[in-house]
Length: 373
Image 1 (cartoon, rainbow, N blue to C red):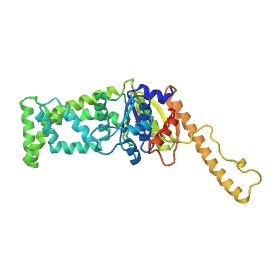
Image 2 (image 1 turned 90 degrees about the vertical axis):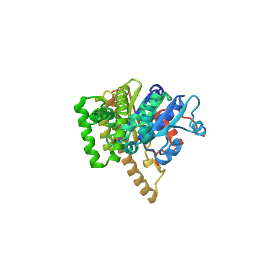
Image 3 (image 1 turned 135 degrees about the vertical axis):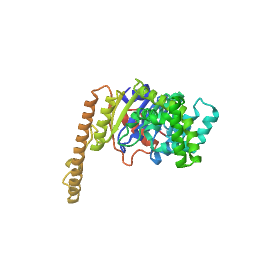
Image 4 (image 1 turned 180 degrees about the horizontal axis):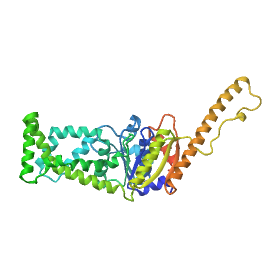
């Protein structure tokens, strides 16, 4: 098996990282497809696929849970039982509600928290906290034991690896002294009196009705906080395991490469299992043939000569780009020191947005070709 084939056959989690706009989502979908074609139950957990790719994967906004691709699509993709491919566009509200629903508390407390206006607004606000949502989603889905492989498409931002630090930030916030003062059930008369005084002042400022709901929310937030802290710490350790691989996708663009180098440095610093680089949208293709004077037999006409000069000029530009991309690929290979995946994938006009495109991308990634019709 080549590097990619082995990666999706052996790992439990593949985390796909990189700058925005380098093709992380399509690479994630292709990796998930490769795993499912090897007979594994695979979930691709994505952030924001293109419209056509979302239609291909059968994902849409606000789905409460992952969805299996329909049987006809899976057959066309070369997936056979026991292999199966599921996809989910992360739904922050569903993630937050699932955490609360799993609390081992009085059903009335759980239901009260779910119905609380402040909790509802907070769970909707989490939609902007992609780093935390991705981490908590991964925790919940791993715990279910339903999938052999989960491919996570990380948030598309310059700080895409911040989701790795989200557990630590979450623990620091939830363990803050001010928040603990309101949540603590112990602490003596002084602490109780202090909290009571604060509540009276805040109630007078904002109104008793609103702060009654605030108090109900915070009283139910204590057990939730303990769960969130535990999950965050568990995932921090889980992502350092031998069955996890972090794959970096980049393009030859200078800014994308700069971010890829920074991601690689941070992955090494955090001692996370690095899976390799994919140089996407590249022209580093060995054996390409470029046009030259021999393209026209005999003595070319004036029109042919003019067209040939323009074509050769374009070919020379492309040769320079191809040479630069090959040098970049060699640099990436040197950084990994061998033993990891490092490969180039060519740019596809129009992008990758359907099953046939994904199948072609798999061929470039080294997966065996399977007819899609």
